[in-house]
Image (cartoon, rainbow, N blue to C red):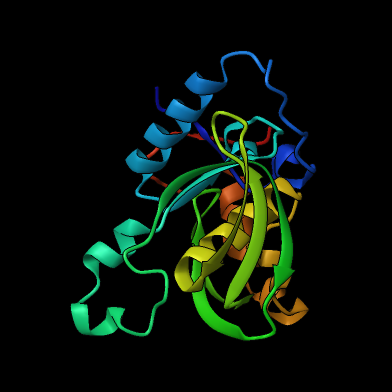
Length: 192
């Protein structure tokens, strides 16, 4: 089932997600709904807070970007061809010192894309859908998407990384989102 994506301004986007236990009700259905919602919206990642669930859960699909990329552009990326994966209760253990600037957007903040600096690689511990623990290193575009979604479960948005001047310049666009004066190809849930 396609769920409405929570829009900028909703309090759930600013809350730290809660840990998920093995007895969480209907977890497989929530995950299936998140995949369907993300795919329908054309996203590469979706965190549980973006569908009104204040949980430490996100899904990512970095394969779609590689599928569209010309083969000569894929060479510098260590994470090609990408991954499609569920992350439960993740913790980023280490950020690399090497950062790179690239454009990001967010399903909860439609029509706004900004350059964001992220670590080129991360080491993360997480549980899979069967609650087995893993510790893996992620690189490049996959690491960027994970960091973006991880911010969501920490109650942060990519806008928080921008300079105060840049945030002021985006105020009008953010007000449009808050006043529901935007169109998306996916359903959204707005603050009253």
